[in-house]
Length: 284
Image 1 (tube, one colour):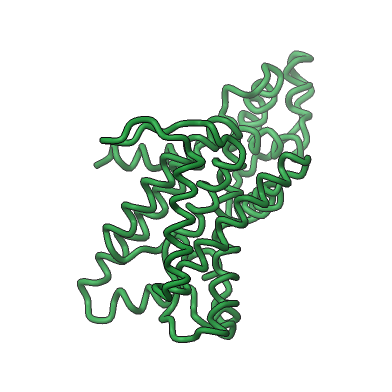
Image 2 (spheres, helix red, strand yellow; image 1 turned 45 degrees about the vertical axis):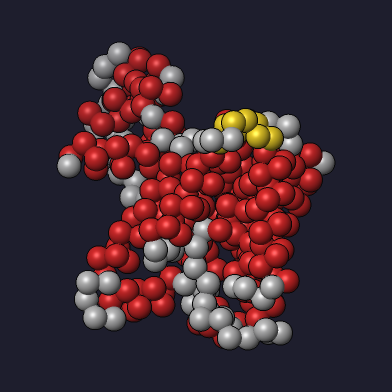
């Protein structure tokens, strides 16, 4: 059990581990909802705070659901299908474009899917709400196919298939669902996510990185909730010049060093930074 917890903590301590982090969040939410279902009304009460309402009023009352719905699943087949697609195509994005692009696609897909869902329900009302990572997965699938159309994935019983054809099948299934009025709101969310993935990659090819505002927002909230240890720094005249230089490090500089450790680990520090941190801790 300790090993599992260590692996979980390690996934969130590494700065470039977005795919595993997203998968873990989805799994944790799924387990919490499953355990809540043991109690009467438990799953419904928690789920109400996570799923996207079918009205703009509901979104205004619970604005966080614009994103939380994309991490929420009730059935094992639903989460399994989404996480498999996320893993296969997310690996392509993360390996070839980087961690931030994967996270950007996931969040923009969720936002675009939510807006498409809400917009269409004003015309075709009646949906109980929206949950699931499908819109985000569609953004990642279409994004990968737009940037790397000739890359291939090996599918069981089929062999190697170009991802452009897999993305086409994803889109075709949702288009048929919309035309057949089957899960209309959900399929419109899929197509909204797909459009976001396409636009994200087109803009990226033209020099605009849509992941930047997402990463800046996540970094802001990460800093907001991060507890930063304070080290009191004092100056000592008696000692070597090297020690004195380290001791005069300002609190601002120590905070910067601590931030660097948080993002990249202790080994990323220079020799001088390690010395300053060491002497500052001694003078605490």
